[in-house]
Image (cartoon, rainbow, N blue to C red; front, side, top):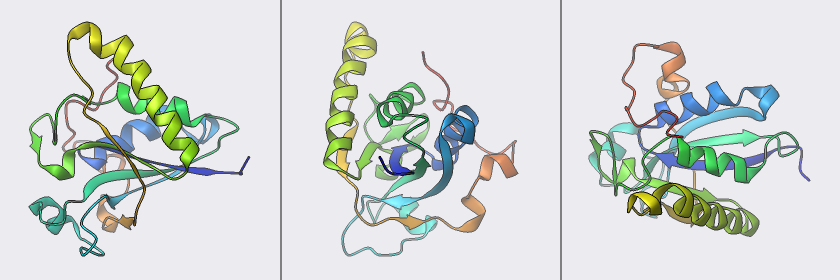
Length: 173
């Protein structure tokens, strides 16, 4: 097992996604480092910046790249937590944030991660969403190129505790 692994999640505004993971998974609980940035966009759109992603033309998602210790926290646990902390039933939207950049997506780095993400998605669907008559619309794709967001976005809500946070970034169960 590697000393660390990478998980990549998109669940709306990347500030809130990073914030909730870091709050609930400090290093002793397995998350070693995070970066917010962009992935999953058009192949011809390289090194996008925040404003171009927000315009929708790049098709990138705002995402968080999580370096974690698999001996402390499993990938399946992170996937389930991802589902707990946003609304995966809204297409290209979280709260008032709308557009493909705010989509719900899991970007996997290995075939094993893909299998785990699909399994956990099915389990979460059956346990938490089918009883309510709603369907998870989260996409599961192989991770492609990653671009860090500008420096001021990194750990934004820790540096700006009164900054904007999407209301869906909370524990739902």
